[in-house]
Image 1 (cartoon, rainbow, N blue to C red):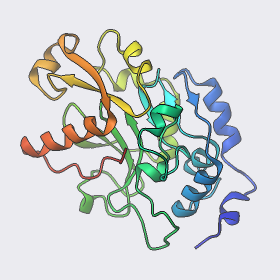
Image 2 (image 1 turned 135 degrees about the vertical axis):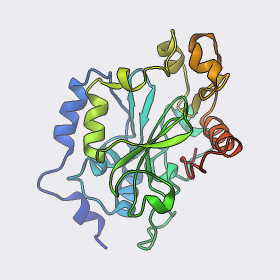
Image 3 (image 1 turned 180 degrees about the horizontal axis):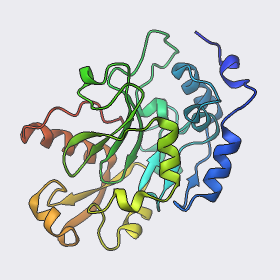
Image 4 (image 1 turned 90 degrees about the vertical axis):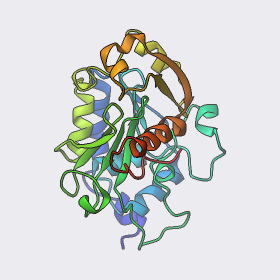
Length: 250
């Protein structure tokens, strides 16, 4: 177990290079202010250093909003002890620790058994970093690789890249292609209007033939993000898909 000073006091932190990439990103990246204490708490539990992209995000940001707020990347944001609805009231995202239900006090024996949720999109897509045994958690891909829970198929997909490459990919401006078929006319305005505790529910649901035939004809409304994720998990079971497992706490 490494102490927090060993994790933060590194010669070549990732943040300066990452900050430059954020400023130059065509994905209209918005960096949210970090909670210093929460960032250090997350880093200690993760046991990664500030040399890593993951460590840089939790130490130096309260999370990222990308592509008009469509994608949210978690950092050292609202602590786990914050009030319910705090992210919406304060314009802050929950921290990586809060989303993944880190222990309140550092526990060297704890780890995210089914993988670490590192990002979500507003329609219920979830980006997670595989743990040491993805197959046991029902996830595709290799240990340490990124996966995506797709709200239009209700299944996990391997992204064939690690966390650092994933962040670079997000900032590259290639999200338009990735989300082809999941965005409707006017999506930017709807995403920008959301509170950070909200997502968008789409009806007929994104996995339905009706939505996939004509997404622009669906009806949509802003609801708590936990509701968007809960509906996806519920219907995955009803429709005979594998249990998606943990999709992140609100």
